[in-house]
Image (cartoon, rainbow, N blue to C red; front, side, top):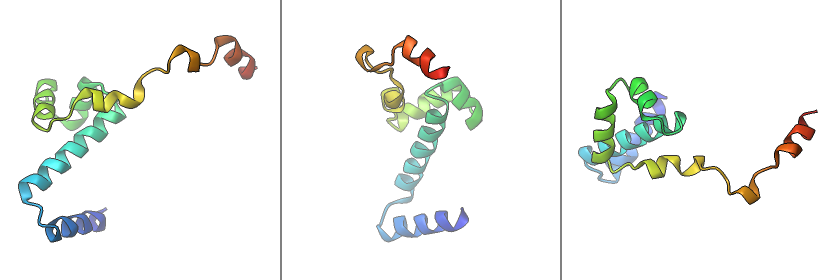
Length: 93
């Protein structure tokens, strides 16, 4: 892991990315990954991140990280694309 972080820092430094932008992108990606793990549940994500839920919400606002972006992959498919319950029961037997 340390080698990967060193390589990332070297690439960002070589690209001329300022420290505040690098830290912002790291925080944004880190928080995003924790939120995805908890399927957008901010309370559980805040506990794992070691911060209060309100602090997480404020930080998400600062980082322009919206819940629509986090929950995009978790929406239920439209009815026409959902398997019928009877088909699921048959396949389970």
